[in-house]
Length: 280
Length: 266
Image (cartoon, rainbow over all chains, first blue to last red):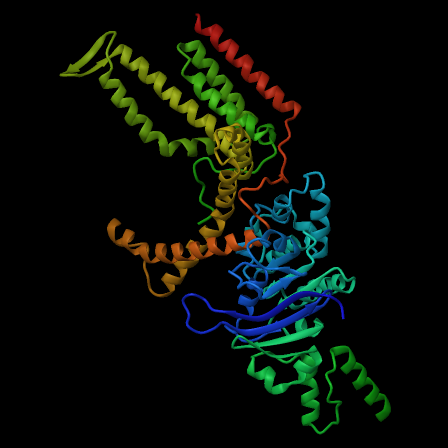
């Protein structure tokens, strides 16, 4: 097993104004180069967990390590350098006056020289297909386009770990697929560890591991195939089943024998083709 | 709501004035304001008017737009002019009542006063209509740089300025959204006395403030996550480049100053 990019041990967290633990004795490991999807209902502690990893809330001492470094006030600057964080609301993380200027914001903080910036910005915008919009102002962009820019802004800094907090929620299905495929490519090149908080079954299916969070605890951690196949669990956390699974269940209901393991869209398509071929 | 033309709002264009360095435009505008007070006779004032006309023409913005800019300020100018006319002395007295008098010298002064106002307002309008708010912020930041030695937090002020400018349209949108939401609940913003209308804006202002604070908080967290530290030096993506035409502009200003001081002797 590869080294852990993130190690969380017995993490408890409570907001000052609440008397219930938001995160309850949580333990989790994410190996480098893996994609972990975190699913769960609203208020299950997903965003809190993500913020604690990046040290954006006061992280309890000796509970979280990123790339071997404890998350505490002393290491916070280095931790921020390792992690790219994309938030849900794209408007409130758009700092620059134009798309290019916003991507540049992080680079300016890193003191990248101004002669190098255009190249890096161009690369990052190309990844999310926003090159043509580089001089647009934020109010001229749709929510989805702003989310793409936010992702480009995080990727431009070449983070080791990318945290997406429902960062593709405003993209149309086509655009989301596009962006996620790009991210999957970066993961496959071994350059990026990804944590994505999501309600989108297709995004879950792209991950290597899924952690199901409920009432501040991880109730299940397994591969997407296992989690998405678990009907009762999926319903309990309010996730929509991916299309292929819905189709499979419909087929089953009509008395057709379908393999019970999880099949992606492609695999199910092939299986149906095979069946049709043998029948004919 | 966003379409309303405000005094001195930026109008996109590619004229020479648009392309000049914002630093030159800001400093040049200040310089003209100072020069206006050195103009003491018809020749010098005429020279200032010609220079102003040149700038207006170079900006390729319709004269009507400038007039629309000055019109709302007309009342203030007239009010000041009237006060000046009745309370100054010297020359031939046309009319007098107690300390109030109308004199020939007073009327000449009023003429100059209106002219000065006119030149100052138009000159600054030339700058604001040809410079994007962002370029303006960059220019101000660059010009404020020397203040760093006096421990003025120039970088932070510049960041505040550019974020404020960035969020103006966003907050304008928010205002119209809240107003629509209140209208949908039966609120009427367009009738009633001034006081009732003002009172009806309270349910707009409160949600707006709450939302803005929330926005500010989220923005601060996002900026922190992207490595912003107000106390660390940062590089700059947008660089201001001083070009030949900027040097040209500066020389024209110097020449103008020279001629003005020559004409003062007349």
